[in-house]
Length: 146
Image (cartoon, rainbow, N blue to C red):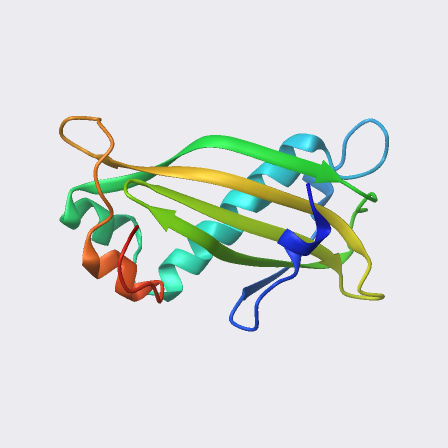
C-alpha cells in the first residue's frame, strides 16, 4: 500500500477511542480481529454522522457489505491507549466504495495501522449490488459517479 494513498484529506472523519482490555491478544497487544472491528466501527460511526444509520439504510432498502479488507499493521496498540481512526471515502463507483482508514496513537501521533476497504452497496430484497443513489452520494460529499 502506497503511503501517499493514506494521507488523510482535510475532511477525514476522526473517530477517537481507547483500546479496551478485551481487544488484547496472547501477545499482549491489540489483536488482528480488533483492528478489523475498529475499521468497521470508524466507518459506521462516520456513516451515522452523515445521517445514515442502520434504520435509514433499511428505509432506503440498501446496505453496505465488505468485499475486501487490506490491512497493514505497522506498530502495536496496547490496553488503555488512546487511538484515533481517521477515515474517508477515497472513491465511489457504481455500486462500490473504497474507504481508507489510518490509526494513530494519540500520545505521540505514531501511525499504527492503515487499511483500505472495498464496500459494495446491496439491495436488501435481492441481495444484489445496486448503484449508489444520489442521496447517499450527496451525504458523503460526492456529486456524481463515474
